[in-house]
Image (cartoon, rainbow, N blue to C red; front, side):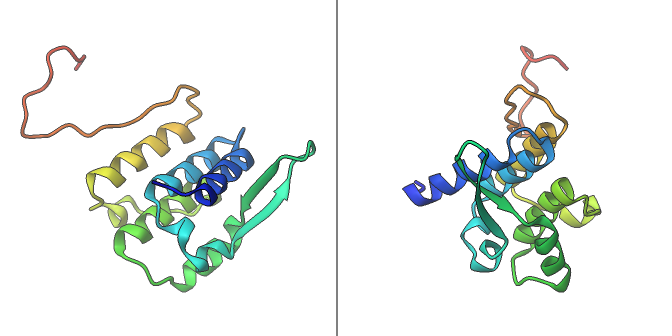
Length: 142
Protein backbone atom coordinates (compact mmCIF):
# COMPACT_ATOMS: atom_id res chain seq x y z
CA UNK A 1 0.00 0.00 0.00
CA UNK A 2 1.49 3.37 -0.99
CA UNK A 3 2.25 5.78 1.82
CA UNK A 4 0.89 9.33 2.03
CA UNK A 5 3.97 10.86 0.36
CA UNK A 6 3.71 8.46 -2.56
CA UNK A 7 -0.02 9.12 -2.95
CA UNK A 8 0.66 12.88 -2.90
CA UNK A 9 3.32 12.47 -5.59
CA UNK A 10 0.86 10.50 -7.72
CA UNK A 11 -1.78 13.21 -7.25
CA UNK A 12 0.60 16.06 -8.12
CA UNK A 13 1.96 14.24 -11.20
CA UNK A 14 -1.58 13.56 -12.42
CA UNK A 15 -2.56 17.17 -11.75
CA UNK A 16 0.36 18.33 -13.91
CA UNK A 17 -0.42 15.88 -16.73
CA UNK A 18 -4.18 16.50 -16.68
CA UNK A 19 -5.44 17.69 -20.03
CA UNK A 20 -2.63 16.28 -22.14
CA UNK A 21 -3.24 12.62 -22.94
CA UNK A 22 0.36 11.58 -23.78
CA UNK A 23 1.71 12.92 -20.48
CA UNK A 24 -1.26 11.53 -18.54
CA UNK A 25 -0.76 8.11 -20.13
CA UNK A 26 2.98 8.11 -19.42
CA UNK A 27 2.44 9.24 -15.82
CA UNK A 28 -0.20 6.56 -15.22
CA UNK A 29 2.11 3.94 -16.72
CA UNK A 30 4.97 4.95 -14.41
CA UNK A 31 2.62 4.94 -11.42
CA UNK A 32 1.28 1.50 -12.35
CA UNK A 33 4.80 0.14 -12.78
CA UNK A 34 5.83 1.49 -9.41
CA UNK A 35 9.62 1.41 -9.70
CA UNK A 36 10.79 4.60 -11.39
CA UNK A 37 9.02 7.05 -9.09
CA UNK A 38 11.03 5.67 -6.16
CA UNK A 39 14.44 5.91 -7.81
CA UNK A 40 16.65 8.89 -6.99
CA UNK A 41 18.10 8.98 -10.52
CA UNK A 42 14.53 9.39 -11.82
CA UNK A 43 13.41 11.82 -9.10
CA UNK A 44 16.11 14.27 -10.22
CA UNK A 45 13.83 14.86 -13.21
CA UNK A 46 10.76 15.77 -11.16
CA UNK A 47 10.04 19.47 -11.05
CA UNK A 48 7.73 20.78 -8.32
CA UNK A 49 5.52 23.74 -9.09
CA UNK A 50 2.08 25.29 -8.79
CA UNK A 51 -0.81 25.97 -11.09
CA UNK A 52 -2.16 29.49 -11.53
CA UNK A 53 -4.63 28.86 -8.73
CA UNK A 54 -1.95 27.60 -6.33
CA UNK A 55 -2.48 23.83 -6.70
CA UNK A 56 0.74 21.89 -6.17
CA UNK A 57 1.89 19.94 -9.20
CA UNK A 58 4.95 17.90 -10.09
CA UNK A 59 6.17 17.95 -13.67
CA UNK A 60 8.49 15.45 -15.30
CA UNK A 61 11.42 16.82 -17.27
CA UNK A 62 11.00 14.35 -20.12
CA UNK A 63 13.80 15.85 -22.21
CA UNK A 64 16.31 15.65 -19.36
CA UNK A 65 15.19 12.11 -18.59
CA UNK A 66 15.48 11.18 -22.26
CA UNK A 67 19.06 12.48 -22.32
CA UNK A 68 19.99 10.43 -19.25
CA UNK A 69 18.19 7.38 -20.65
CA UNK A 70 20.20 7.48 -23.89
CA UNK A 71 23.39 7.45 -21.79
CA UNK A 72 22.14 4.31 -20.06
CA UNK A 73 20.51 3.74 -16.71
CA UNK A 74 21.11 0.63 -14.65
CA UNK A 75 17.78 -1.20 -14.61
CA UNK A 76 16.14 -4.50 -15.40
CA UNK A 77 14.89 -5.12 -18.92
CA UNK A 78 11.26 -4.64 -17.85
CA UNK A 79 12.10 -1.37 -16.07
CA UNK A 80 13.88 -0.10 -19.18
CA UNK A 81 10.98 -1.20 -21.40
CA UNK A 82 8.39 0.63 -19.27
CA UNK A 83 10.52 3.77 -19.12
CA UNK A 84 11.12 3.66 -22.88
CA UNK A 85 7.39 3.34 -23.54
CA UNK A 86 6.64 6.24 -21.19
CA UNK A 87 9.30 8.32 -22.98
CA UNK A 88 7.84 7.32 -26.32
CA UNK A 89 4.39 8.52 -25.25
CA UNK A 90 5.50 11.76 -23.61
CA UNK A 91 8.68 12.77 -25.46
CA UNK A 92 8.15 11.13 -28.86
CA UNK A 93 11.14 8.82 -28.33
CA UNK A 94 10.88 6.13 -30.99
CA UNK A 95 10.82 2.69 -29.42
CA UNK A 96 10.97 -0.53 -31.46
CA UNK A 97 8.16 -2.67 -30.08
CA UNK A 98 10.27 -5.80 -30.47
CA UNK A 99 12.66 -4.41 -27.86
CA UNK A 100 9.94 -3.99 -25.25
CA UNK A 101 8.30 -7.39 -25.59
CA UNK A 102 8.58 -9.89 -22.80
CA UNK A 103 6.87 -7.89 -20.07
CA UNK A 104 4.83 -9.83 -17.54
CA UNK A 105 1.04 -9.74 -17.72
CA UNK A 106 0.69 -6.90 -15.21
CA UNK A 107 3.10 -4.61 -17.07
CA UNK A 108 1.69 -5.61 -20.46
CA UNK A 109 -1.79 -4.65 -19.27
CA UNK A 110 -0.44 -1.34 -17.90
CA UNK A 111 1.21 -0.57 -21.26
CA UNK A 112 -1.96 -1.43 -23.18
CA UNK A 113 -4.00 0.77 -20.83
CA UNK A 114 -1.51 3.63 -21.33
CA UNK A 115 -1.79 3.32 -25.12
CA UNK A 116 -5.58 3.55 -24.91
CA UNK A 117 -5.26 6.59 -22.61
CA UNK A 118 -2.77 8.27 -24.94
CA UNK A 119 -5.23 7.85 -27.81
CA UNK A 120 -7.38 10.40 -25.95
CA UNK A 121 -10.15 8.08 -24.91
CA UNK A 122 -11.92 9.86 -22.09
CA UNK A 123 -13.47 6.74 -20.59
CA UNK A 124 -11.34 4.91 -18.06
CA UNK A 125 -10.17 1.70 -19.67
CA UNK A 126 -8.39 -1.11 -17.94
CA UNK A 127 -6.92 -3.95 -19.92
CA UNK A 128 -6.98 -7.45 -18.48
CA UNK A 129 -5.20 -10.22 -20.31
CA UNK A 130 -7.21 -13.41 -20.70
CA UNK A 131 -5.67 -16.82 -20.15
CA UNK A 132 -4.84 -18.07 -23.67
CA UNK A 133 -5.39 -21.65 -22.53
CA UNK A 134 -9.03 -21.00 -21.68
CA UNK A 135 -11.83 -21.07 -24.27
CA UNK A 136 -13.19 -17.64 -25.24
CA UNK A 137 -16.06 -16.25 -23.21
CA UNK A 138 -19.17 -16.59 -25.41
CA UNK A 139 -20.72 -13.57 -23.65
CA UNK A 140 -18.04 -11.27 -25.07
CA UNK A 141 -18.10 -9.97 -28.64
CA UNK A 142 -15.44 -11.44 -30.89
